[in-house]
Length: 86
Image (cartoon, rainbow, N blue to C red; front, side, top):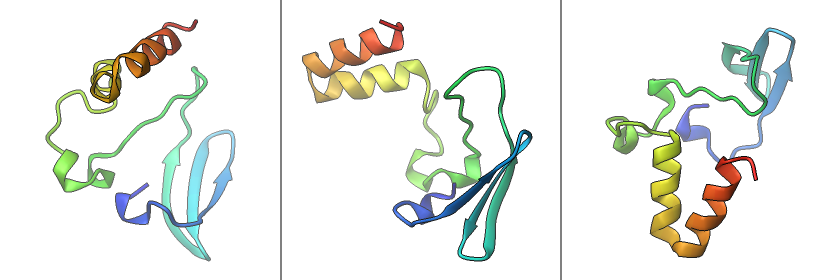
């Protein structure tokens, strides 16, 4: 979703092959639905806030562990266990 819509109440239509998002009656975006792994996501570069567009590895495992580490050691340990499927 475009970052400008963060916090808005939107309607989502899911089919076996498409994800369509509406703001009221206006179609905001439509993307192919990812299949294969539960919880998959994709981010289009134009949907990312400008200050994050040049971040290498944005949303990668490394990015998440660095963010958790910046919160504190307990958060890092918790997120590390979660990412390993424990």
